[in-house]
View 1 (cartoon, one colour):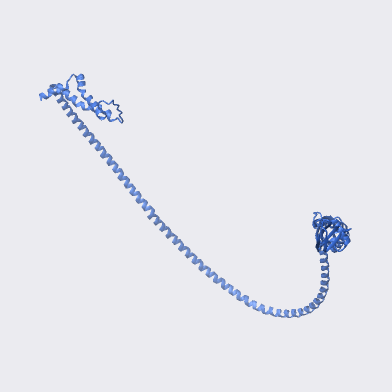
View 2 (view 1 turned 45 degrees about the vertical axis):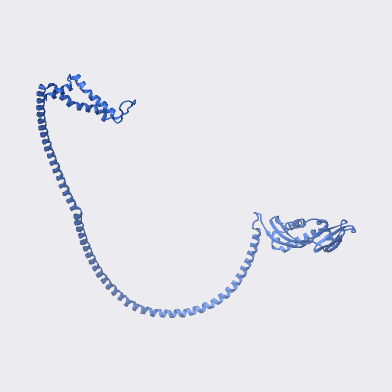
Length: 432
């Protein structure tokens, strides 16, 4: 139990015990019994609706789109309208009320577009807005809604077929205004031209009279001036002819002098060129011919010297070969004689000392035999020796083996010749 209040933009609806019908309290207060009475609230705020009607065909079949702006609100001062609004909208949100009012206005807007031509809507927007306002208000009043205002915001043609229709209407009106302006301007220009022509005619008459006087004065002036000019031109022509003749003579003399200067310059150029040719020939002879001849002479002398050297060397070598051959022949002959004499002496000695001679030959031959025995060892690069641990090892073993072979030589000689070297050497020692 308690009091409930609301502002002037809101209405309270009380129903239940103690009330046969619902009580409406727009902006005020009321006592409410809990559980036995019910209190509901509904907004009385003004709602702004944007109403779009796209591609609606007008009376002439032209599709256009219209946008309207409407201000609506639930009427709180009229009990009947308030009761009708509560019956329809109590318990609904503000958005739902907006949707219902918007659809109602949109339907009436489309209906008015279909009953009017594009020109009527475009040229007289106020008429269209008033028609929509009146038709929509009659329906919305029954819902308890009052149309505060309705305004046509925009008209456009979006279909491709009729694109530019509204623009064409504006252009037609603009052309009409321009045409009227041009007509007015032409009429004003015509009147101004007539007055200007009259004034120009008077001006030209005065001007022509003045021009005649001026022409007569100019004629007299020109006649006198022509006489004076003729005399002046005659004198001037004579002077110009004399001046031209003298100038031609002067130019001819200048040209002759220039020709002489050119001849002299060319002669000097020819002389300079001849001197340059002579200088170049001398330079060529000094830098190329003379060095070439000197080099040629030097090379010839060097060749002759080399040839003489070769010839002399060949002669000397031939003489040396000849002398060497003679010396060798003499040496060979002397050696042969000496060897023959030695051999003869040896033969004589052998006759007396047969065994001793053979022993002497064997002894002379033994070193050669020893050299031949030791020869293979000098060409040996590597010797691998295997020892059982008894006897000599290494170089001593090889030396002992060579010496063993040499010790066996007297026995070999005795077997081959029948001469005992040791016995023969003892006999020789006794004879000596």
